[in-house]
Amino acid sequence: MAKAEKLTAAEVLRQAQRLGAVWAGLAPAGKSLVGAAAYTGPTPEELWPQARSVLVLGIPKVDTAKALPGIIGMEHWDAATEILDFAAYRLAVWLNEAGYPSVNIPADSCGDTVPEHKSVPVFSHVEAAKQADFSRQAASLSAAEIAEVQWVSVLTELVVADQEEVL
Image 1 (tube, rainbow, N blue to C red):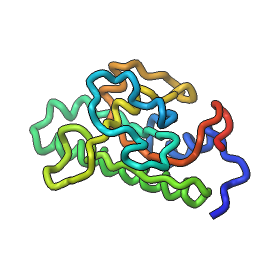
Image 2 (image 1 turned 45 degrees about the vertical axis):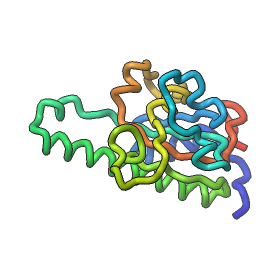
Image 3 (image 1 turned 90 degrees about the vertical axis):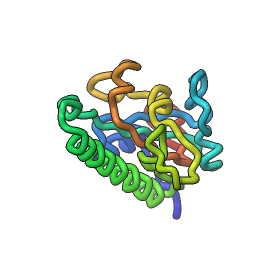
Image 4 (image 1 turned 90 degrees about the horizontal axis):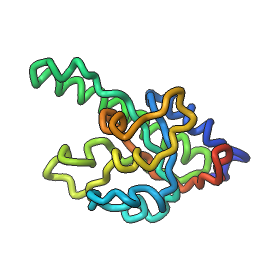
């Protein structure tokens, strides 16, 4: 499919929010996860060699759910994961349709929540979020706030040339 004439970073981030993300940010794949001393997982390029950028999508964890009995809190987590996975999948489809090959990395492929039967290398959405640019958001996120958000990622061939245009 031919690439769209012009696609801006703002358009990509707005699309992510239309699909359900509260926060959406972009990071160049080559820089993401650099400097994360404790991070030992694969880089975006190791997971998908075509990756040039990482889009991270997030929604807040519901603080009140922590006080609920375990199964109810888990249902809150599952609902958030479903929203994020849907948004990331649809964003990857949208980008593919615009001519930018992209793949989503599901929420359950990160951290200690990876089911034992998964053979996918562990990818840290949180570490990717720490590298992302959230300057287009109404409110910026601190490192502590990033840790309190549930994240998912989309690896894409689109290149973020600057804050406005996507090539």
